[in-house]
Amino acid sequence: MTPNRLRTSILAACAALTIAGGIAYAGVGADGKDAGQRHGHHMHRHGGAPLMGTLRQLDLTDEQKQSVRSVFANTQQQREALRDQQRSNRTALASTMPDDPKYPALIADRKKLAADAIQQSSDTQTQIYALLTPEQKAQIPQLLAERKARWEERRERFKERRNRDATDQATS
Image 1 (cartoon, rainbow, N blue to C red):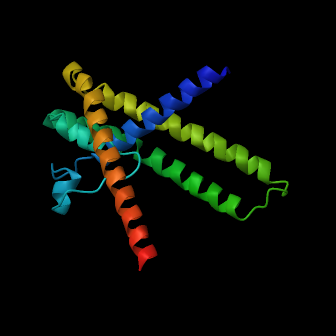
Image 2: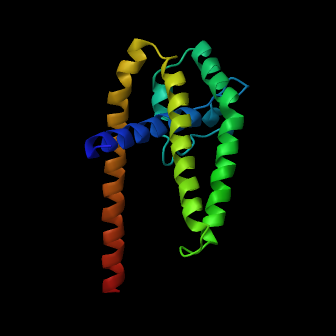
């Protein structure tokens, strides 16, 4: 595989994981409320979930929300089984030294499980994306760019605060 093709594949996989994770995080419960409404507050979104807020901004119809729930319900057992396999592999790797004869096989399993997770995420993302209207799909890049800009702004404020705190500690 050429370096450019590999890079493109990795970027596509990352994008798919980001979108699928965001969609999963945006799930609407059986009560018809989104996760934030069920808990009575705005939920924090962490790594891999930038599409959650984006889906809310797309104003999904009730039918779209139900379809998203169905996609995740249909793939829940597969996702859980893959997560369990990954957890087991991580545990085995944590207790296996690199010179152990089993180590290469564990690394190969980890790579396969990562590829399986990317494929599963990509498949789910494709199913969810197919539920969106052309207008909703067209809004996603701009909404994600806005979200990234807000994140960068918060990151800069955090760095400034951390530097200011370090300076204050050094002078005291």
